[in-house]
Length: 116
Image (tube, rainbow, N blue to C red; front, side, top):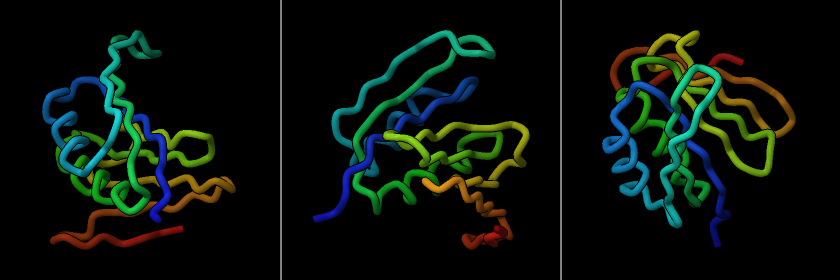
């Protein structure tokens, strides 16, 4: 059986309905949307339970939707996914449970380049 992950997707200034739709399309369970005050103002967090293999599909689907890069932080009990405008659009920074960082940069087409 595939491993389930609790995932928080947080963002601002993006269409909540589009993001929520993507979360549901990749098969998330127990999805909740929360509007909260974050460090930079009002923030939307979508919380759900994903199968481990659907997390990559979620990131692939969110990257073009968001105007910035994406950080996927897997160091805690929940996988935290948030946009980060310090990263160029399409770039994904993955932080592994041991703290190791890897970046996936868009390289045109549907493939990217991983840089550790």
